[in-house]
Length: 227
Image 1 (cartoon, one colour):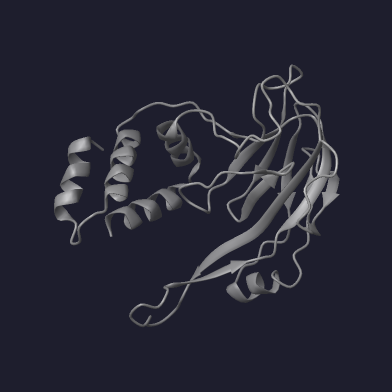
Image 2: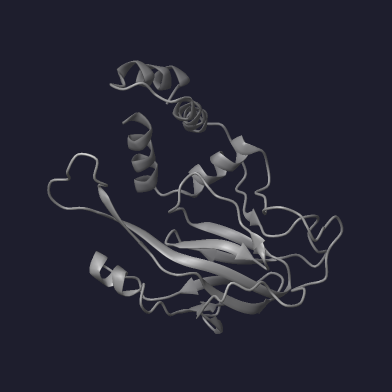
């Protein structure tokens, strides 16, 4: 797909595009045109990595990680992308919610949302991460909106390691950050630093998210961009 095709899309759109969507489409065009980028992960700390390396927590699209060790995680272009979170070895507290979007069947009234949004209360899992290990969220995934809505009353599951061994259970978050530092600060770390960053500038972030997306997610994004 060429940049020319992207601009042709501007001409064919029925409604004026906002500046944000124009920029988004340009970036999507650059990615589709074949701009290469290395896959990046969400770094959950400020500063340099520990010399012994890091662990990885794989979060599916339904899981929104909001805090790691008291540090807010950044917002991303699309809510339902699967992301990998780099964790430093040692104790880690991960705060997250389950969130899914379900299309409404039948006629939607003018001004009414076309989807149902199902989101649980924030939950937390605390575990000791080992360098080089990969962890993931394990829970029963609903197959219908009704099943998803039941999770708002009782969302249970666990963090498991690469061998499938449970390392932490989900618990309702009480709003408290870790009482003690979850790890020894590394070089360049500061206690009052802001939200965690994804390596690279905004363009690199968007390109990384695009490469993480499934084919269905990419099609849905392009439909949104040109609607």
